[in-house]
Image 1 (cartoon, rainbow, N blue to C red):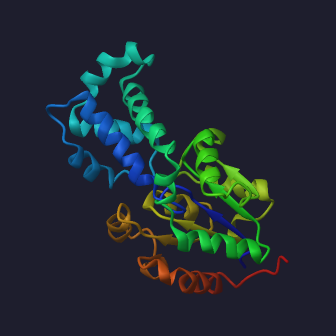
Image 2 (tube, rainbow, N blue to C red):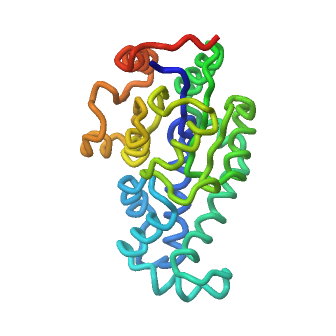
Length: 251
């Protein structure tokens, strides 16, 4: 039975993944302006969606040979490791993007947000579990007018291990006092789907331009539970709930 819903934020309620990708790309080109192209970093990021900052930074530094340049910036940026210096540069870019409300509003996924509101109207408790940090989440939810849309919010600040480890999703279930197997999860990337499945939750993945190929190639979720046309989201969600035993009355 399904008695609660858990949503991801980045790539699910709005396309901040594109903004994150752009921030990594601009930071990489700042480190090696004559050797790195923004478009190449953006392409590489499609395989890294859903991973932690350290994992993303390590992969991009390796692929684009950024470590030496990042090491040279460590003292200036007040960081003690090259990957942290790289992330500091990218955060400066990303946080500037988050200060543009019109940009964020233009990145909304209306079908996913409509589903969130519908579940709330039906009385289902809702949780947010996101790899973003709390101050970023507050900013985004404020712009989207979703500050009161979740009973529980779990961010990267709240856990030791990020997705695909299930710690984040399990913590959300614990905070809501709902068994993990009674959750419907709406996610967008293979790593995040893996986390929800490892927590024993039912999952529907909504593919984006950044995650579509990864979801197809990973096979992490049966194709019938992957939504590529957002207009089909309500239909697929209903089928997934039925497959999990139906809805538990919570009103």
